[in-house]
Length: 96
Image 1 (cartoon, rainbow, N blue to C red):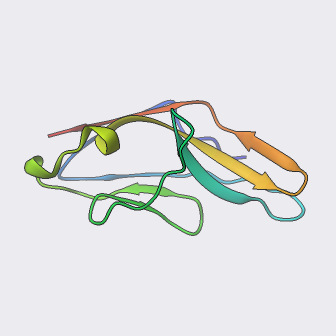
Image 2 (tube, rainbow, N blue to C red):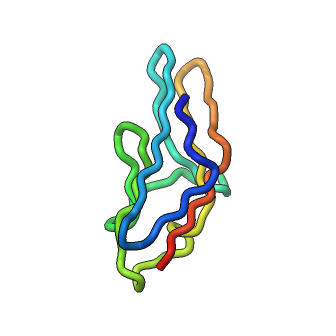
């Protein structure tokens, strides 16, 4: 499993991409969850989960900053019929 760094900081003008991958048979599905256990979904123009499991934070204007998106704790989870494995917490913080 390619585990993401435990801390990711980025500027609003640059955005960030956090990779996560895993191998298994059958091939695991990658999802992201927040600290409270809810599944991460796309937020138009701000956050996107790519099919390859990468969590992407898009560049944004300062007035588009959202604490629940840009200053949060995430975890990557790889799951298949055999079981699931989660990454360590990833603390994300965007600067405005």
